Amino acid sequence: MKKIKRMTVALLIIFTCGLFVQNVSHAQLINTVVALTGNVFDGISKDPVTATIKITDENGKRVNQTRSNAIENGSYYVTSLKPGKTYYVNISKEDYFDEKFKISLANTDKYEEISRDFLIKPKVKGAKIPLPVPPFELNKSKLRFGAEDLLEGIQSTLVNNPDVKFEIMCYPDNDKDTKVNQKLTDERCQALKDYFTANGVEGMRFKTMGSATTDPLKPPPTTKMAKGKRYIGTSYIVVTDY
Image 1 (tube, rainbow, N blue to C red):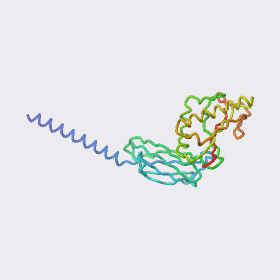
Image 2: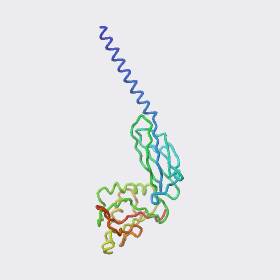
Image 3: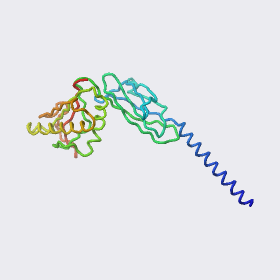
Image 4: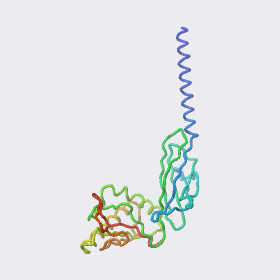
């Protein structure tokens, strides 16, 4: 009988200790904060930018706010974020598109600093915003596999700035045949238009313009390219009004 009592007491102690450790770990997780730090740059010139950075939770409630410092390479630092949560980084600056980036934080019971740089796009008439990675294969007008991932950033920007009117501009891959090039770039523009309108960008906001000749700002290289690399004409989003 005494042996049974001793075993019962031991089990109660183990159970209580387990609850205590669990509660301590849970409390540590609740009290732990995560900081977000990095730099903000102009999406075209790559110059550091001073901009307002507002952090909101999934319900749109403001959690914290700061400003990036252009003098210190566009650096920013914001804290009071909780592990395991999802936040939105809202960046605004006059003459720039309003940007919104989603940040999902991993669970942790230790203080962490998450590094993330941001590029914001200038919102001035005539600004030519290049698509950073060609969404087309060589001499093709169909969006290549995985292009949706490449276009998601600019698509989100356009949706978040419904007042902006723009033009899609596409250039060919060579200067061999202007008629062939015009047909190719018109079809590329249409492919991009179809993607944007299917993903929440109002078609009345923009026009398209294909080119029969290569991009004067980024012309084909005059020397042989590295093995496996090929020149593909640039595609741009050009701001026309807002």
